[in-house]
Length: 259
Image (cartoon, rainbow, N blue to C red):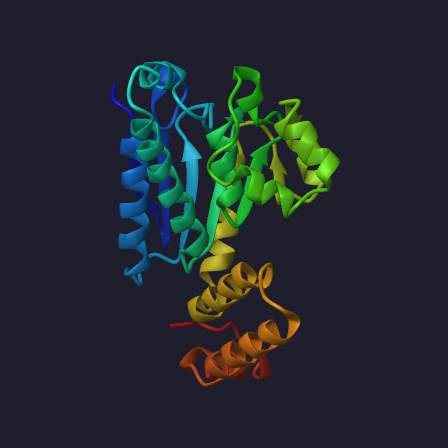
């Protein structure tokens, strides 16, 4: 079966499933392009309020297809560079997507599969899930924003352990480090991710979009610039229809229904 990115709906949540069973859901250019397209469609759809990314079967993603990478060694370097640009376009699309994105991880998230999970806003993982940045194990260096994501989340020594030593880490350890949000029984990651998505779907979309934008800007902004951005977002959200709905519902001890 060819590699593909399957798209289904669960209520207001779009579920994107990495499907490449012959190669443990390994990624490839077709998936990258499909991922960017799916998020573009979801961004413009008011019916979609969140996205869950998962893998088909008991595996999240093995990362890159090593057979394809070996074949690319016989091609001009530009061939692999173009492929990585496709992956990076998808990573950036996830990061800048104005709605919550949740990774539901069963089995292994390796290499670019781990990078993909790190690009998401939340990670829900099965108790027996394994995360590994396997690049150094095959004489390669990271892609998919792995060095960026990990260096902003963990001390240098832990990042070295992951990237240089290529050590496998379980879901419980990453949970203790604050990199995994929920740990579930094996086979339960997708269900838990969908439950989390339902909670997020009940929030005001404009407020979540503002929060994600502010989080994205915070790492590179000065305190003064970030304070100004927070002010502007707050005022805009206060005067949004959902601001009135939320405040009135809280004061009236009712459940808000946001636009």
